[in-house]
Length: 161
Image (cartoon, one colour):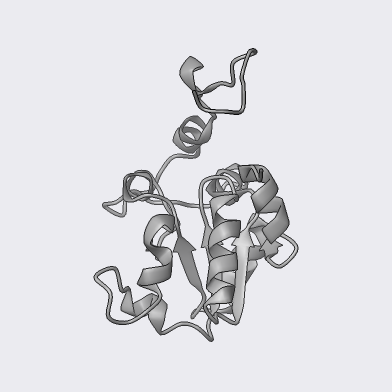
């Protein structure tokens, strides 16, 4: 049985990653670069890279094609553009980048460390109204917060029952 991190590692064989400082440089060099944020809209609203496009991971494939309710014209048109896929920590973005490559996108990379790393590198983000987000707020937002019910019990058995 494949697990989430194993799946991400498997797709990393085919997906290139860049670090936050590489993205900072690419944004300065290439004004047509698309930062594609694949987090959920409620996450995007809290903070995101200014100018990024939000297409949640769950509708990505249909958003890349014409004639679907989820179609995102900007995304459909950029198959030959440079695309950097971002998420919270850099895992969903690997899966999304792999999907984009399978759909014919030619220059796709994933942001390693995700927006958590972007914030740690002290790069700017904005909220849904375009207001700058304080780095300390980002630190708090991106800190892992697991509820007890989300942690694997010591007596965990793989089968559901």
